[in-house]
Image (cartoon, rainbow, N blue to C red):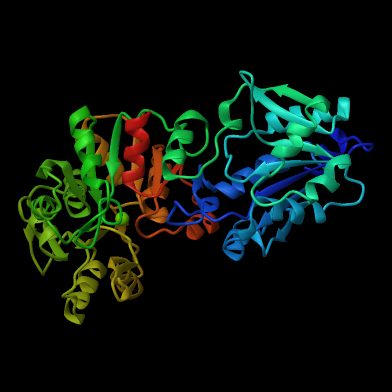
Length: 472
Ligand SMILES: [Mg+2]
């Protein structure tokens, strides 16, 4: 970036960008600066656009919840100023930004942090016009209307310092209308700022801000826990989302690594939340394990099972459940796990039985915190036998292949929606599916940022995906 900037930058008239991000987000439940824009927060997105533009200095003015928002851009090469008086209006942030400028700066471009549709091209055009004309004010227009961001030359800095309240530079623009340069741009994004959840959705439709590049899905693999519900509570929008898929005839499959419940039990659980599905809409890791066995086992093969009803029911139909001389040991989550079960499984695996695992999840979230999941039992057996299991569930490709086969669709246009990076998203990527992370379950935005596993799209929850889908 430094190279590019010095190559483009004009030494006679260095330009700074001042990103104004101090305001309160009264009409959002969270700071709007942290709303998702693609895989970034809105402030990260805007700052990165500015950093990619031909400017010599970038100042970001924070105020309300400065610490939280500052953390989000801590790794960006920008100068952060905190405007402690942000409550007194935009003008106090303008002053804070101007005070942080390097002495040689010839002009300052005021970029609003809630205008995520602004592009590097728009900024570059404004800066270029300034460098050609040295006009004290450069404003973008679209169809004859003026928008933001606006550039002010150093000759107006003193007057800008005197502006009061929420006036911003409006009065100055009016007073200097004869020295003003207008730059035509092709985007309406110069008019849109994000003040309400509605604005966010609207902008999302109009410009490539958050997830507008989302493809038309042909089929969907949907995780359950953390996506459609948490515990016994449906996630807002889940019912509408499933109904939409049913109404539009989009093939979907509810795919869970949980092996303890039968599809019938899921039908009942979801029905209580107002989500009407059929047993054939569900594929559990227990069923997937049974299907996987069909590919490698003789009919009637002998199987030792560690697991609950979901797994036992899936295997009972085609195999002989036994505790001696078995061909397979299949291990799923078992809240009744005992030393005796581990002893039997160990002896069987050591005698040559093949070791199959429904799913690798090491922990399970509960209201009290994380507790041992199936992966913990697998670790015990692996330690005792020296044999690693063949894993069927996510993120292994086997279960995704089975899911696509069940829907009767190919990989093309197939997407997976989940709340866990290391199972849903990693698995989807391995198979080559479109991956969609929802932040309504196991993964926080911070967790996403620090992970090397990146989804194609990120939504707060399926409710937000529903909104984007139905409005586009
Ligand atoms: Mg989940």
